[in-house]
Image 1 (cartoon, rainbow, N blue to C red):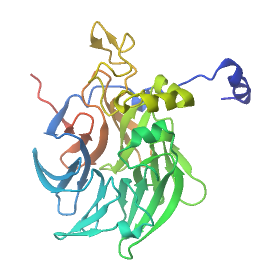
Image 2 (cartoon, helix red, strand yellow):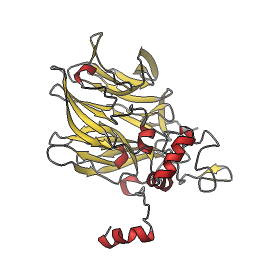
Image 3 (cartoon, rainbow, N blue to C red):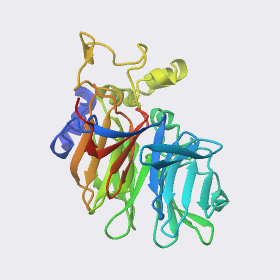
Image 4 (cartoon, one colour):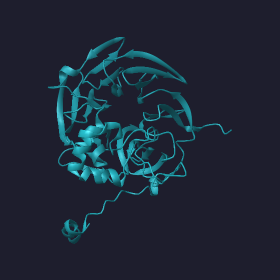
Length: 356
């Protein structure tokens, strides 16, 4: 945008544009045809520990995933919001209420005392040096309340580094736009997915450096890809109506005060379940059939990024699909699992559903 454009915008109106699904983001239906592994309401985080066990969360329950069998292992005080397997063994479980538990050798250790106040973690990343990176979406709202945080335009997220041996946490960045994913760049610097800014930023020394922007949705968890690079789960789409509402402060305040949250004009992990939802008519459906290119509130999208965090390929479940709300990818030697919190499923994108 030129300086002249910025000067004229207050008089002619600023255009609301959304990055297109093009290039590496080009739409397809590959998530729709992936082989189903498990059905689990609120399927969320995935992790594999050093012993080869695959862990999965759904609400406050921690499960062990073995093939297509889902075995409940533990139930916690609130929803599980992140998992991390430690290189030296053990599993860290983050809870919506600020709990942070290290499970190892049949014992559990609470790590929350390392922080000056409760930290509701949205993502965890275990380093080889005995530290744990902890992303905090908002200082004032739990990790599960991302929709109210977005509608209130909160920008009070933070990144913490926890010394597991010493039991001390250090805040290394704040003022983040709801960080939801963590990775490391080639220099070892933390890379954070800022959901509300639709970008990935590297936070290694000096000013934050954007490594990927103009993501056509709300980026979530990052996880290593076999062979190099990263997988990014994009848990909800952007559209012009929601972008407009985010600019209209008075309308948004009235909506928050008077409309039930399920019916807000806001992104969602799933949609189409109620006739009271926004985006219902001709722009979305024709003769009762949902258009695949409709400006939906929910969508299914995961992307593979290279080592420099540039998108290489993506897999989609479009507006007329059912596998929306992708929240986590786990790349294994013989399978590549994706958890859909919206659809309540775990699928293997390396394998296809058998054709009828």
